[in-house]
Length: 146
Image 1 (tube, helix red, strand yellow):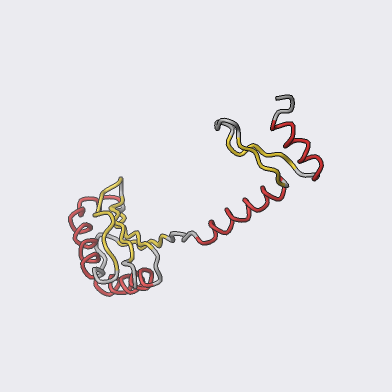
Image 2 (cartoon, helix red, strand yellow; image 1 turned 90 degrees about the horizontal axis):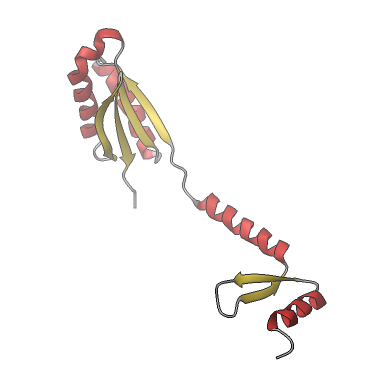
């Protein structure tokens, strides 16, 4: 055999003024394709961009409470939380303990659990209340609407 298949393919690619692109180098014999490589890269980037645009972006909204938040403020913030969950955003509710108010950890946890139980029909608890430093944080994700 005098002429190798790759030489023939290379000559054919030059004749057509296109590129010889190696698709599968590990195959026996290696698989090559004659194409316009710049156009191929452009199309690939275009596909990736379209997939990225379709991917849903997760929005996280935060609501801050104090350990001694009264009912009116609680209800006001709960309405905002309901709106966030209806809009499809995740909710990060946290109680911030200032100074010596850290002794009211139990009040903060009760407040967050109360919020979770009242928002049960709109979202599910993703992470139960957890104390991190001076913050007790809880995540609620929206339920999927059909």
